[in-house]
Length: 569
Ligand SMILES: Nc1ncnc2c1ncn2[C@@H]1O[C@H](COP(=O)(O)OP(=O)(O)OP(=O)(O)O)[C@@H](O)[C@H]1O
Image 1 (tube, helix red, strand yellow):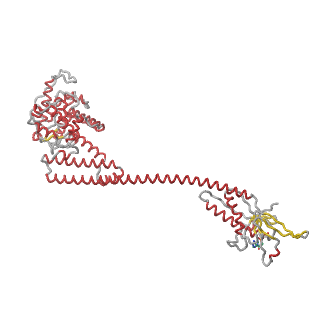
Image 2 (cartoon, rainbow, N blue to C red):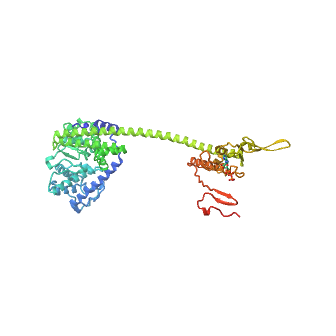
Image 3 (cartoon, rainbow, N blue to C red):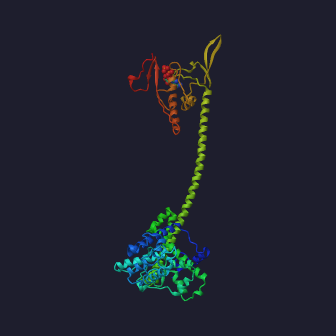
């Protein structure tokens, strides 16, 4: 299977990046710190296991939780490594050059000659390689920053020891950097680096050589893998191509470029693994529907999940492809079925992305409409508020003017009403000669031969034909003044039988037309208070008293005993 068909990035892009950035790294601070922490823990685990295996005395040069420098220096002589390996696999290292007993081992391992400890390390590496363990370069113990490969080797040996101690049940799997590996079974899976390739590697600059060997920790079945993944490595392709080439045939630049490409490519693979792990740990999207519902609320999260699912699918495909490539359990038909499944899932993911995109567009449209409506309503509301404010001002002004008019009409107004003749009384007995709007003329007895006549002025004069409504209409504006806070008093004055009760209350048999001033005034009071109920609350009470023969009587009480008030004098 072509690499570019599976990986989320192309080799070409990797090469371009390498050429452009000269091997520059993508910065990911979180990932780097997490990796550093993980590397420390793994180093402690390796050191602890070595100390436990070799004993307190044998492991005295290796702290339980060593720094990378101390770890390297502790193992530099190769003695601990060889002794541990011989305990796990007796006779694996035939000759171990021990440090002289009387020598004091100084941190840089100078108690042994460089040749002696190089021999120990070399013997250990040869034995480890023959066992199928991931190895490292002897130079890794000479320079800092390369202890991860040594740690890998030690942890692989530890894993092997545990498997062996457990009775060799099942197939031993090296569990370095968190993922299971294909089985390694001693020398049956032994693979040695081809000499020409190794030579070509040694002709590289040390940095390039290290970069390449960083990702060559695990060798089996002729296919290298990345540290955390299970993909076929480009190393195998590079090695296959270079195996029959002589070192001088490979220009230094090409070697350097190739190594950087390989390094960058596999580093990206590692990043993909790490990202996938983090995403799976944090999100764990079990159902696609679940992802959809969450996506409606958090679109970005949805996209991340989709990406992680896509990555997971690709990851599975790559793993399956790797198994198929190695001739393990999966048959090719199963592989194609799974590939089909992956394509379907990819299609579903694309559809989901489309739905999410449409939903987002719809939401944006609704949001825009909503904002526009809110803006329009706020403007409208502002206009209404201004109008209401203006209306209240006008209303207040109107009220003032209205009451000013009432004042100008006179605080005390006098009206005159002429009662009609009752029953069969002839009208020619009337002494009223003329009734005008504001005056009334009365015929008086003739004096000195002249016909007598007197004219009286009133605010308004009502003739015998005036109705109850006409009489009330002239005093009706005063009722509104009452509700504006002015005191108003309306009373009738006149001789007995002149029609006071008729004007103020009405006849005995009341109809709508014959209602007097009192009823009409009360009707207006209730009507206006009802109209203003949203702005003003009025409390209206009524009292009806009769004062007759210096006795005050409550005309509204139903209790006859208390009807008469105590005497005023
Ligand atoms: N404008 C009117 N039209 C028709 N009938 C009237 C009118 N004014 C008075 N009357 C009638 O005249 C009669 C006497 O009127 P009313 O009882 O109102 O006089 P009054 O001034 O109240 O008398 P008192 O002072 O004795 O109580 C009543 O029968 C009443 O119905």
